[in-house]
Image 1 (cartoon, rainbow, N blue to C red):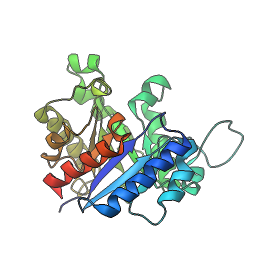
Image 2 (image 1 turned 120 degrees about the vertical axis):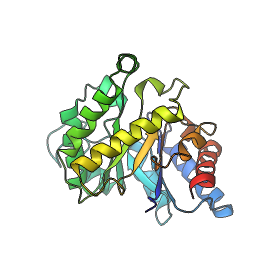
Image 3 (image 1 turned 180 degrees about the horizontal axis):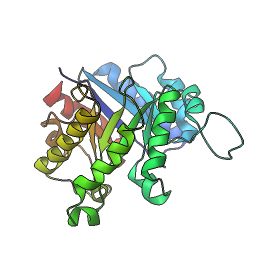
Image 4 (image 1 turned 135 degrees about the vertical axis):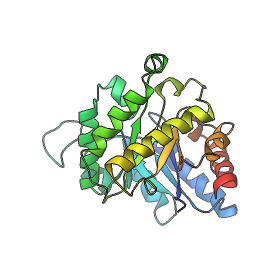
Length: 256
């Protein structure tokens, strides 16, 4: 069965509230002129400050909104924290969990990532769980070991009765302009699907696996041509409306 494609824009610490809303307005205008490929879902993940204004502007459209991170708990005395409950109220439907920048810069380990996935599901958010190896780990032949450890920790914490999306993002590729070869990426995607199938029997054909890591309009076809991937997690290339629409269009030409 063909899994619906999922195209996720991670804006990281870019775009003011005004800029995020302006992007949404322009994207809607362009899609009214040309709806683009059918069979894919777009998810925009702005900063926490822009989440509610962007979600309000996109209300009623086919474009979904997600958060870039969440904290544990629901409400309470945790200065600066944002729970799944609060993010959902602001309009989020998805949330990125365990991005390599969170793992490296904020010391988020596998246990915390798994706990956040549990919280996301409790709060009615669909988690997009990132896994991937560093350059040093890759050079030492540890890609399979690292990805297996990261994904199995999540699979052991939740049950397959709720949607969980996984994204392979080789850390060494993010922001570098380099990407793994098609065969290298496909090998990791197949590893992920095998792990999902082993922990959640019968569901590996349903769970969506994305690719992330220096995705742009030039590299997108490489990943669209491999059916192990169901979409992409895009960083810097998603900040420009033209580039974002090109990514979606070129994916759709292959897959939709």
